[in-house]
Length: 231
Image 1 (cartoon, rainbow, N blue to C red):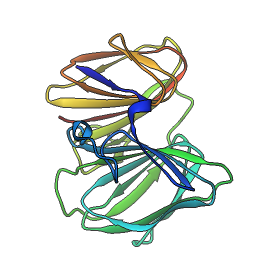
Image 2: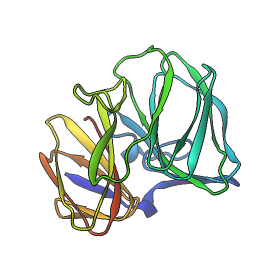
Image 3: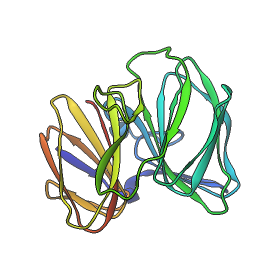
Image 4: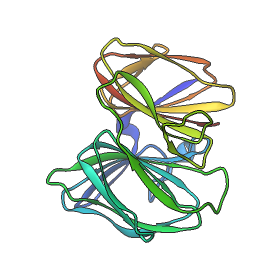
């Protein structure tokens, strides 16, 4: 089953520095039909104004992945981790037993990102943060972060999940096998695709279950982000 969630139907929040869309219930946005997807709880589509950002705040027992679409984000936490992650790259924060962090746009232009929260397989892991650059010149999907065995080049997750992304030229079809008991959430960060002939537009979400083989065909050059989780 492929359920498309058009961008126009997503939850929304806006203030003087943040323009956010929510694929799942988050903050003041509540929709009982979109209360997470398997172990995937949050997928926020955020635009952060220059010189602003999220002041220090706590998290606990959550794997938080940030995929930068445009611009860059600067991270700082109470464990002394600090770093800048720019467009096309990803950072992972293990909230574990508790972490306090801030995320700021120190750039001169808006930063646009996806923030993704996945429930860990176990509570009380050691908090941590990592960021990694990934090559942008290649064609196809790369595993950016993963808790699956064998994904040795990805940032580690304390969750049975994988975050994949890549750029696909128009018409460059890829196939993805979805194992039994797994679910996939897919979002074109830009561009559009068909998934088993179902159209998914720019920044739409597609919640996918009970589909063994997915044939993904970009209808224009597309930057695609996907999360594979236990259903």
